[in-house]
Each structure stands twice: as structure tokens, then as C-alpha cells.
Image 1: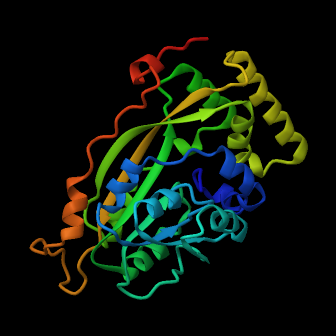
Image 2 (image 1 turned 45 degrees about the horizontal axis):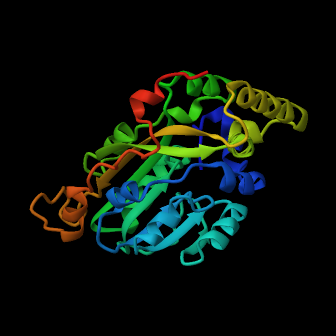
Length: 290
């Protein structure tokens, strides 16, 4: 899922089902390296929250994890079930998890944590995590250092460009301070997938038909004006990952002496992802070739 939840946008969180197909076609995925850092190298039981159409789910399953994917929207999960049939699915919210106490190694959410009612969801997440288990969170942010990406953000909205869970996790008292990692991710887009990407955004999906079509026409004009043609261009993202162990409730405090091979392996982390070999690096991408 995506975008920042505010009181004024409560209905935005329920807007994804009607645009599930566009979401699947247009949204970026996640690199195997990011998924590996989030969960660890050893096979784990993973409960995914706000799984959407399975953008991250597919990577987790490919890495050998046992994934139970949940989402409050049945239409999104229907697409996920077709795309990643190896994952179990449940229609469920982060505030009421379909898992027993201390039953999973990792609870993970991609582009979704900001939608949760944290006062309710964080105790639920802590409840289902095994001792030494972790909450893992990830967001893809468009790389707004690049001029044309900033112009795209101004056109379609930038509310999904924020989110750092550190303060929320600290206030809960349920998790140790999170580790973090960032990497680059590149999405190949063309005119059609850019329209799908924008159509799947909650702030666009909630518009009336005429206003939405007018906005999408602006997006097409932006793409054509940029001059890359139907064959497409590359949209750069910064992937921000966070991982926080659950506090050991049986001891009443974090157990610093606990040895957990799976978590230790995860803590080492993978090597930093190699930049896409497309003839450009981040510095080159900072150039606006218009």
C-alpha cells in the first residue's frame, strides 16, 4: 500500500481495491537484497501486513520464507493470490492479526506502516512475534534529488515521500531501537505504466471521474513532453529499510545476552546492492536531460 494517512484522508486507505490491477502493473517492486536485509538469510516464518498485490511478497517467497500475507482489501489480495500462489493469504488489518502469540519470526510491512493505528497495531505485532523476532518496515521513495522526478512529484503529490518509524517505535516501548539501511532501486516505466502508477495512488483514486481523467491527461502530457518516447525511461527510488527486535517481555526488559542465530545472520546484512548496470549511476541521474 502507499501514501501518508491523515485524518482528512481516512477514506484513502480504502481506495486501493478498485485500482488493484493498476497497482500491480504500475508500482515498483523491491530488490532481493532489500528483502534479504529485512528478514535475514535463513528461512523464517513471516507475517506480512498490508501486502497489497504482493510486490514484496514475491521476493520473500523467492528467498525461501514461509509467508502469510494479509491485507484489509480482498481485491488486492485476490491479485496477490494469482501472482504469488505460494503465499497464504488472509483478509485482515494490522490491528487484529490472524496469528497466535509468539508464532512468527518476522512481521513485515511495505509501504503500509503509516496506515496503521499504531496504538493498537504495535501491541498486536509484539504479541505475535517470537522472542528475538523483529518488525521490518520498508518504503520506496522517489528520488526527488533529480529535477524531473521533483516535477513529477509536484504534479501527482508527494505525501508518500515521508515516513521514519523510529519515534513511533520508541514511544511504544515494545521494540528495541531500529537498525536502518538504504539502497537504490530503478523502475522501468513507459507511458502506460506511468499512468498505472499514478492511477494507483490513493489521492488520485479518490477523485471524481472527471478530475481524475484530467489529472491523468496531465501525466501523459508530462511524459510526452519529457521526450523519452513510448519505449520508456527509468524512475529512480531510494529504498528505506528498518528492522527492530521486539522487547523480551518474559524478562521485562530487552535481553542483551540472548543469542539468536537467525537475527545475528540478519544483523550482518547483505552487501550493499550493486547499482543497476544501465550505463548510469546516481550522479548521472541527477542530470536533467530534458
